[in-house]
Image (cartoon, helix red, strand yellow):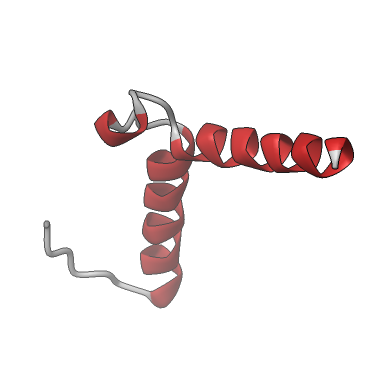
Length: 55
C-alpha cells in the first residue's frame, strides 16, 4: 500500500476510480483462472440467465 497526499478530494476520487477500473477490468486474477473479475461476473450472469431460460 502506498500512502499519497492528495491536494483535493477530486484527485483522490480519480485515483480510486482508476484503481477500481484496473482491478476489475484489466488485471488478471490467479484465483479466477487468470481471468478478469468483470469477465467472470458477466459469464456468471449469462450462465444464470441460460439456466433460468432452461427451467
